[in-house]
Amino acid sequence: MLFRESGFYALMGRQADLADIINAGPKAQAVLDIYLYQVKRYIGSFISILGGIDAIVFLADKPDLYNPVISHICRELGFLGLKCDTSSTEKFFCRF
Image 1 (cartoon, rainbow, N blue to C red):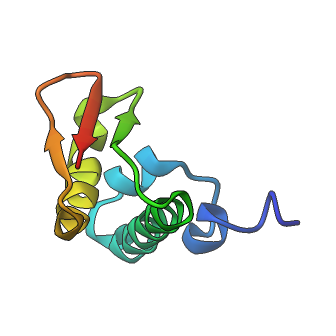
Image 2: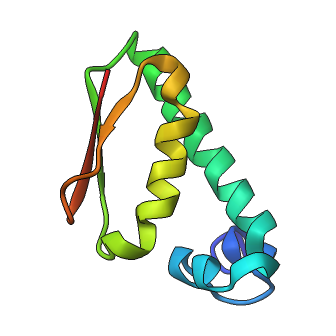
């Protein structure tokens, strides 16, 4: 039940991945907002637990599709001094 009826499935009412959420547009904005909140929460928790970090690397199988999501996460974590290099088409490297 946890695997099949939670996460994006529970929020969208059907099987979905992040690409489906992004392509769904405005009707899935709440789902995307929840996803972004969770990612930022996990990153913040890991930084706290580790006592700081030197860099974050985002890898994406579809960089053009995920660019707005990763850019949003980087902007939201900018108050930590995070600087992101989005020049690569395959990965995003963010350093402090």
